[in-house]
Amino acid sequence: MKYMNSFQYNMCYYFHILICFLVITIPFWKKCYLKIGIFVPFLISLIWIVFDDCPLSKLHNMNNNTFTLSIYKNIIPNITEKQNNHMNTSILLAITLLTFFALFNFNCKNLNLFIEKIENTKQL
Image 1 (tube, rainbow, N blue to C red):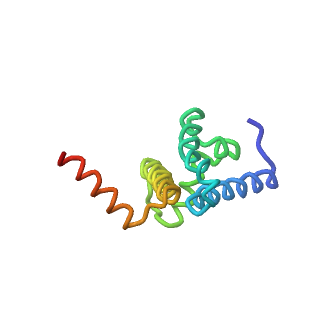
Image 2: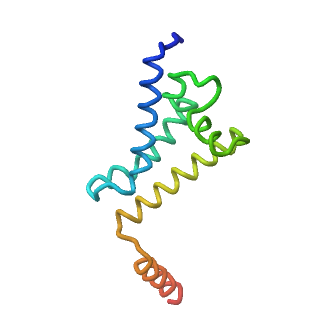
Image 3: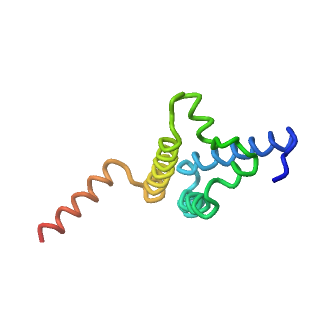
């Protein structure tokens, strides 16, 4: 693979940060965009599976360090690759759940009503 110059590397790095920021903000999007946004975490996971890693991390050759691992190491210095993968999965799952709750107007009251309906159907 041809190595990038510093400008290309920085642009790719900042593009990676922009994508991460957009994914983290999905639960706060307008409802019309949430219908599409709810599938983004799944698509990201699928891309990671197909390419065996994030294509952007591969593109800017992180020296066997993934992009998120380099960020997490600033917060948790002893984090392992396995813990990094678990953190990424947990974050994507949380984003999906929060997007689901935002899309369907779930709040504590609605959640309690939902649970009561499930319990009532069990009693029948």
